[in-house]
Structures are given as C-alpha cells and as structure tokens.
Length: 154
Image: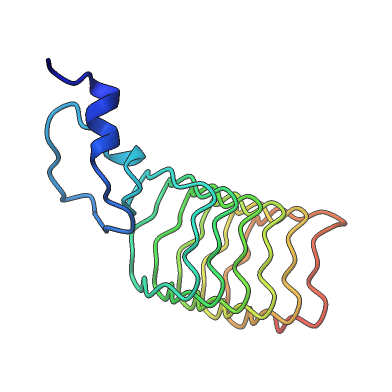
C-alpha cells in the first residue's frame, strides 16, 4: 500500500535545514512546508533563539511569531518576509535587507539594525526600544502611534 502525498510529507523532517534559491527539490515536494529554512518558507512559531543565520535568504518567508531573540541575521535577506508578532530582541540585523517586510507588532528591543534596509517595511505597533538604527534606510517605512522608538539610536 502506497503513501499519499500528505503522509509522505509528514515522513520528511528537515527542521532547521537551510536551503536557498539554488536548491533542487523532487518534483511536487512541498519544501516550503517541511520546516526547512529558506526563501518562501512557512515556519510559524519556530524557536530560533540564538540561531546563527548570517546571510540567510528568507525573502518572502512566512515567519509569524518566530522567536529570533539574539539570532545572528547579519546581512540576511528578509525582504517581503512576514514577521508579524515575531520576537527579535537583541538580534543582530546589521546590513540586513528588510525592504517591504511586514514587521507589525514585532518586538526588537535592543536589536542591532545598523545599516539595515527597512524601506517600505511596516513597523506598525513594533517595539524598537533601545534598538540601534544607525545608518538604517527608513525610506517610506510605515509606522503608527503604537510604534515604539523610545531610546532607539537613529
């Protein structure tokens, strides 16, 4: 008796495995839903505390409520990523690409965003208390009265 597609997908555990745009997958394999980490992935509520992910490509990824506290995301590509309600306290995001990212209600207390590109990012309700935004690109960034930039270094 053969396994159906859903049963086959459940047998594959690629939790925390990294892939990029050059990775080749078997035809029909739903790699964005196997807990691997890369462009377009969907890993809501993952715990990536202190993860070492410098330069990772997570563009257009769905990262709802992901815990990235103290993660190393230097130079990471998070453009277009959905990070709503993510926890990114003290994360190292120096020179990261967050262009057009959805950062609504994200917590980035003490995050290092030096030189990061936050153009067109949605920061409504985000908490950037004590964040370092030195030389960050904030062109057309969306904020609201609930965006906390108190004591941030801009």
